[in-house]
Image 1 (cartoon, rainbow, N blue to C red):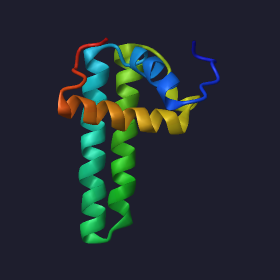
Image 2: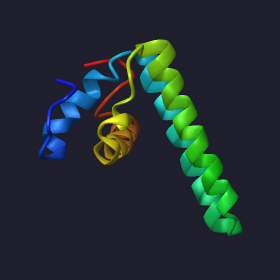
Image 3: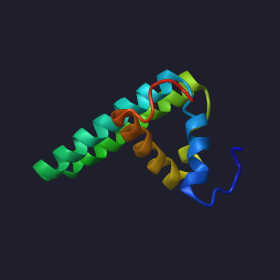
Amino acid sequence: MADRDFKTFKEFYPYYLSEHSLIGTRVTHFIGTSLFLIFAMSALLELKILFLIEGIFCAYLFAWIGHFFIEKNKPATFQYPWMSLKGDFKLYFDILTGKQGFKGQ
């Protein structure tokens, strides 16, 4: 399914979840996205672009650790960058609201 031409995010999201099926991958993504949000808020409050860059670095570092060392797959962001970014935030907020858990689907 990795080379599909997804037309909508609704089509893409089940694939995204399948690429994030292990608890460790979801945890590393959650940590990375949390750090990104903290750094992004700090960047806004302190008016320092470096904080935003550091936040992006943290988000990718933790996500790639999850993919390369835990899930043992290639990050979907390499092939679907914008849908993947949207998927990261959707999964993050779904975990926060209890719609998704740290267990795979």
